[in-house]
Image 1 (cartoon, one colour):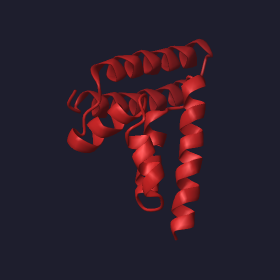
Image 2 (spheres, helix red, strand yellow):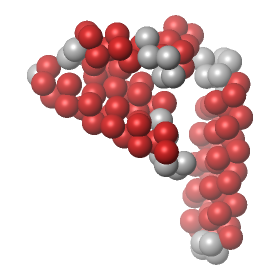
Image 3 (tube, rainbow, N blue to C red):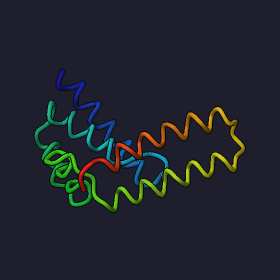
Image 4 (tube, helix red, strand yellow):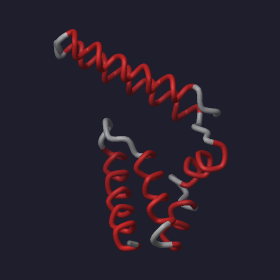
Amino acid sequence: MRVIWLIFGLASVSLGLLGVVLPLLPTVPFMLLAVFCFARSSEPLHDWLVHHPQFGPGIRDWHERGAISLKAKRLATVMVGGVFCLSVLMGLRPTLLLIQGTTLCCVMLFLWTRPS
């Protein structure tokens, strides 16, 4: 079972690293998933990710307080707004825009109700 957790952890880190360069792919949720998987498979990888200079602070904040930094909240809000505007400019059907808008509003509600 540890091997399966390790594979999922490595896949999550890979997707998270892709998210660093691809604007629509989230980084932090994949890193949080990787930490979860590594906690069940590899203590050295878990410790490496928790103490990583870039990803570690966000992971520790989430783990300790369920907190998301104000900078991350603002960036996510701008990105979500940009994605929705892009959808409008692409001329998506109103039904799709309604579904997307509702989903994005729920995401923003969750995000902004977390402590900073």
